[in-house]
Image (cartoon, rainbow, N blue to C red):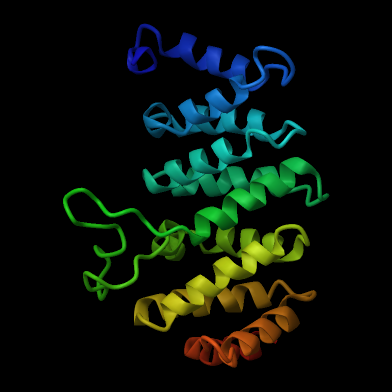
Length: 240
């Protein structure tokens, strides 16, 4: 509440920045966790730049204890309408691609956010259900999929980095399969996912072969075949 008051807001944000940088040893060891939770809550929705600055400080730490709070904060900000700000921050944080803890934490935050469906609104509406062609009662879209058309380049790069990082790749593939499954149920989703798959393949390197391998694997999964994966193989072929 003090942070939403013009009188105290700056002092509250300065305090959160101090907590984010606090030592992990001793009585203040959980202060970075608390800073992340506060920045990703109601306070951060109205000032996403300040919130992401605090979260960037938490993410830059070498220890992993605050990872859960960090991921939940990123997810909450994205679902609160701050997707462009969140994606820009994740691009900046993961840019070194050096396998360091901050980079891996940033990519983990991305793939978990990419996989998580939008929560139902108390009124019964959801971001996914508000999209043309998405009927109530169908599978809910992750917030990043609902915003894919306006954030194509950032999503392409973050998916590419997540699939390239060995530590993150299993979760990234699981999240991508979720998007492919949704594409099979909705024509708008199919267009968005096909555009994304093509863009990732055009990054070059191992991406085309990796996408072909896993799309074929999902399409022929004996327990739960994903029919849309076969259709998306043409997107990869067209990108070569």
